[in-house]
Amino acid sequence: MLGEAWMMGVLAGIEDAAGVDLRDCDAMVGTSAGAIVAAHLVAGRSPRRPSAVGTDVEVGAASPARGLAVAAVTAARRAGQTALAASATFAPLALGVAAPGGALIRSLLLRGLPRPPDTLNALRDQVERSGARFDGRLRVTAVDRGSGRRVVFGSPGAPRASVAEAVEASCTVPWLFAPVRIGDREYVDGGVWSPTNLDAAPAGRDTHVLCLNPTASLATRHTMLTVMRNVARSAVSIEALAVRRRGARVRAIAPNAECAAAMGSNFMDQEPRTRVLSAAYRQGLLVVADNRSW
Image (cartoon, rainbow, N blue to C red; front, side, top):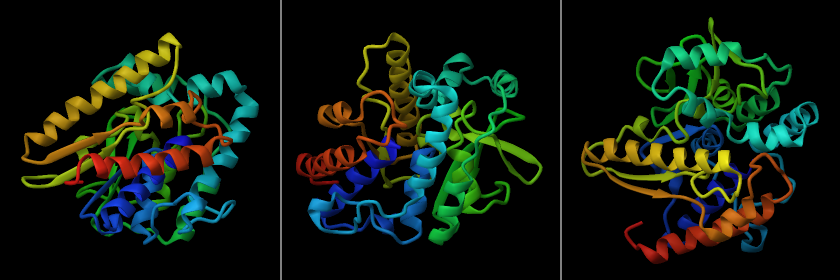
C-alpha cells in the first residue's frame, strides 16, 4: 500500500520538476507494488499527485491499489495486526534471507507455508479494467511456487499471462494471500526473489535506469526488520552493478527521511497514504533539483 503511494508520488514529482512524461519510458519492470505502478503507466495514466497540486488525483477515486487495500484489510483481520506488520511487508525478503540463491530451498519453503484463503481478485479486476496490456515495454516479476525460480512476465519466452494476472501474482505475499494460478503453474510475490529485480531491466549501453526501492529506508528499531532493510539495500547494489556492467547508468532512489517517517514499518497500512504521497512528491521534486540529469 505505502510502497505504491511512495513510488507514485516520487514519479509525479520527477515529472513535474523535469518536464518529462514517464509514460514514454522504453521499458518498465515492476515487482509487487511496483507492478501496480508500472501497469498504471503502461495503461496511459500519469502517476498520481497530491490533491494540492491539482492534477490527476481524486481523493477516494478507484485505483488498482484499492483492490489490494480491500484484500489486505481482510487478511489483517485474519492474521492480526502484528503479523501483518511483520509478515505482510517483509515476507518476500524473509524468504530471500532464508535461501539466498537457492531456488530448491525457496520452493520448499513456499510449498510448506499454509495456503491462505484470501486472494487479490479485486486487484486483478481493477488492473484488467485499466486496459493495461503487455506492449513490449512492460515486465512484471513473480516467483514460480513449484520451482522457486523467478518468472518475468512480458519478457521473451515467458509464460503467457495477462497484465492483470501478472500483477496479481507479483503482489501475492505468500503467507497472506493464496497463490495465483496461471496456466498449470502457481505464482507468488516477485519480492520473494528480489525487492526490485533491477537486473531484469532490458538495459544496455547508454541506457538510463531509474530504480525505486521503497523498503531500503524502512523506519524501524526492530532487529529483524533492520536486517530486511539491509538485505533490500544489498540486493539493489548487486543488481545495479550487473546492469552497470552492461553499460547502463543506474540511479537508485530510496525514501528520504521525511518519507520514511511517514511510511513507518507497516507498508500495508492505508491510513498514511495521503501523507506518504505528498512527502514522496516533494522528494521527487528534490531528486531533479539535486541532479538535473534526471
